[in-house]
Length: 172
Image (cartoon, rainbow, N blue to C red; front, top):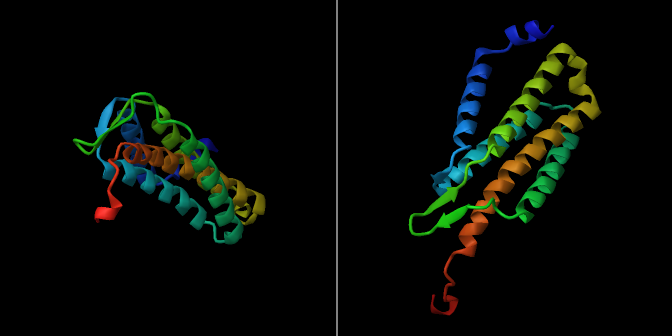
């Protein structure tokens, strides 16, 4: 059964997996990242998680609600935590200094696994696509990953705000 699933997986899925692994491995090293890249990658990953919800037209209202509730809950939890030690905003260079971490790799692999297993489960048992519990569970998982990616990005932007100079509003 496993061999059947693997051989019927489109080739582009394996390319995506390789790209995510490569990108995740780079995240394990300290790096300097511009604000656009620091924001764009989490938005793309959150959009990919949201696309998983959109692929389930049955019970769309429940799916969207589960996704949003979990995304907001995880986002709030992540945002309350401080940025990892060594994370800095370099205003003089408009760059974030980010220490290496395995968390992005693990999160990307988690989202990939959820999307892959969700799709494989529906291919094996097509009736799952219409089952409310399956739809809510998958949407909640996807939303949790979206909240994680977006929360981590928001923590970086919080550093920018903490290091910005106060503006004289009256002079403007």
